Image (cartoon, rainbow, N blue to C red; front, side):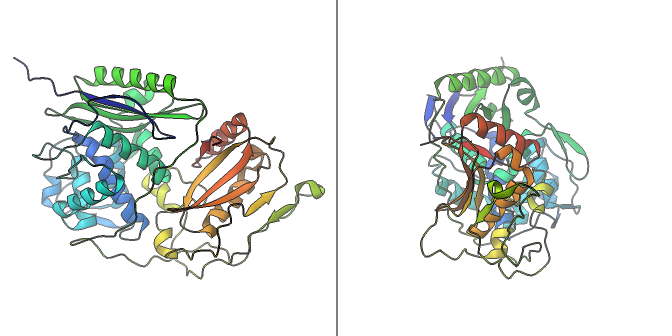
Amino acid sequence: MGAAAAPYAALVMDARSGEVLHAENADTRLHPASLTKMMTLYVVFEAVENGEIDLDDKVTISRAAAAEPPSKLGLRSGQEIKLRYLIRASAVKSANDAATALAEAISGSEAAFARRMNRTAKALGMSRTTFKNAHGLTEKGHLSTARDMTVLGRHLFYDYPEYYNLFSRRSTHAGIKSVPNTNRRLLNAYRGADGIKTGYTRAAGFNLVASAERGGERVIATVFGGRSTATRNKRVAELLDLGFRKAPSRVAVRRPARPPYLGPVGHGRAGKTVRVSGLVTRSLRPMPRPGAGEDVAVAVAMSVQAPAIEAGVDVAQGAADAGAAPAPAARPAQLAAAAGPATPAPAPRPEVLTRVSTAGGGDWAVNLGRYPSRYHAEKALLTTALTDIAALDGAPREVVRRSGGFDAQFVGLTREGADLACRRLQAREMTCFTVAPG
């Protein structure tokens, strides 16, 4: 007789609002398998962003990491490999040896890293999840739920957009070889699918957290306990279809609250000072185009002086070199550590940049992401406008202060205009998403 089927659970969520559209056994604690690596990567992204470690740092592979069973990259004990390649291998190949190496590089040991994973899970509201390792191989007490993993997938999309397209790559170069994406069948078969993570062990069955975007709507579906890759993918496609049918076409985007940075504890590495070059020392003021006259005059309320940060690191490099498409001056991985805590403004100024608009007076927006300071959000907006101004059609620029940083967005667009602008920016490998009125 064959092995008993793993317990089944599923959940579908509107990623924009966080509303649950469908749930089956969504709070049953089950084996997550390699869905675990979503949290491993979330913690690594946090560590890189806050200067604990750099993408270019070389990690020495331990005997324990090299000995992890497949799926694996094939790392050897004593081998040195850059952190960026371990990130790629974990996200795309779902390599267990790479995940263990990441854990040891960040926290000194996998046990210490698992404790950090659990602190982060609690901060994200994953109330029924307990991690024991960084890779997801079956271990007593290593359990999660369809609801918690969907919440984690949503946080990855909103909290680290500069890394998100790692999960949609059909293959990637991981330093020692190119590796295929374990989720490539769904990515190829389902229109709009762009992530996130597969998982399989005998105890877990075939698991998947999948996200897809169509016409400004984004849905996340999670399945635990599929019987095979094919049946799991078929069920996920059905759940995504259900989600798109149930999700309203217009809904206010409510980003999940980003947890505070607590820093490493115990065996964690101390943060390092990161020097950043390429920042301007005066206000960025675009020159009028020849013959354009007053219609394109730019009023830039950007008297913010650049921080006095010395030379050393290319601020746009972090996400790109990890394998993700960088946003224009995207909230770079090392930037928060370099700039330090943002000095609070005396009073938030939601609209700091304006332009004579020909956008049609709509209520939609294009959001470029969240930045550690108002200056960097303003710089990203201006850089983007100068790079691809035709796609944005002169839309007003706005910086909104949030609890986790400063959102940079172009406003006053129609839905069609926002969708078109975001597609054009994404075609240039820039990160963005549309925001519905609300």
